Image 1 (cartoon, one colour):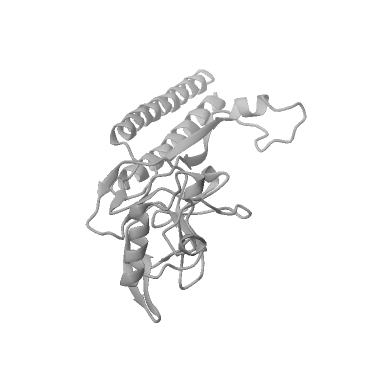
Image 2 (image 1 turned 135 degrees about the vertical axis):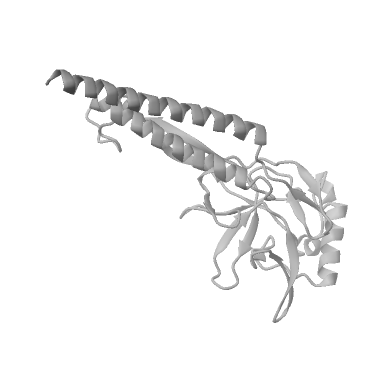
Length: 262
């Protein structure tokens, strides 16, 4: 009887954790480049039974479920026109802009391409709203002087991806700084940080996307689907109410047993 009580209580707590994930998705529905998170659960009893005999597992005992992790899929979402030529959207899945914090030197990644020209001691640079430098294909900050921006946009309009092997660009044009995209061997392992950014775990290195499809003058909208999130919320609310009902029923049965014992 105690087992049923704690299993139900654990289920209710897990539903609350899932509701937190859903709430976070809904709160970011208007944030450009945001990718919704999905909660992954593990069945504790099934987890232990399916391992080999005598194995020392992460969970040696337990019933019910727990939220094991959250994950995101980095597919391209809908695009919306922007009033700025230095707003960019990545049209490739699992690709990100590389950013550097000028104060700490820390590297992070984002799919939000809302940039602006910011003045620093040695000129103008392309930066995010959070004051982070946008890096080019060589991992260097992108200069945002007017001639630099005009040349970069001209390259993007003409397209620097060769359609045939004979149409390769000369070395000088290929080495010109440009807005670039990076990917990872396993993007699902990226860790979310504040300001709609991601950092890789230790040992996971970025990979430059050759000839990435990046469009200027548009922004990638949030990947949150309101209808799907509302369905998940209803499911979670009902599962929570059922878990509480199980807690109540277990408590009533235990009370009845104790009364019969006198």
